Length: 258
Image (spheres, helix red, strand yellow):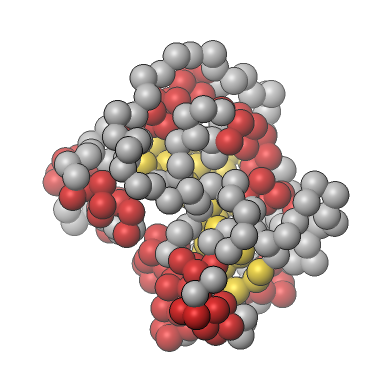
């Protein structure tokens, strides 16, 4: 580990808005904050929104600035990247933004039933080889049901045609209510320049700008997740992304270490 990373981890360890629990296992007990984020961490009753695979935290920080009446938590396992957003929060004294460093596979150990109102999946690794690793798979959606309010919102923003198409099939197979859908976000936003939608979706992450610079269109899907019935995993063949040789960070939580 470089000295730069060490200094970032040391600095972040003193941030009161960062919770670090990177060594969870299936047998780990629920985290002490589970069911107590409103009371203990944010000290208010405002809705909680998660960004899963937050990377540098650009989205949850940007959303926190736009919506002071909501609480935002960026979740990722890569602490060195998370430091960027966590430091912005510290410098700006944003009291409605926090970070959780852990593996997303164990996210239900941190939040209780109905504790979260929305989930953002921003540029998640499409995990083309294994459906259960995709953050929009029924495997993960069933897990989100354990803490997401009934009919809570899921936002998927991605450069990956594979992941977008796959999620489309999941939503269709389970008749999940769609609120917004586009395969070319920034072209769609040209007609919405003064709207709240434009302000929200116009937040650009570091990785997103890379894909835009390469001429890739950004896809966005917003849908609701009811608590019932049981979800059906679609059996479909989807064309693989053709640009997988590009360097992409794995931020789904499937990596170990820092």
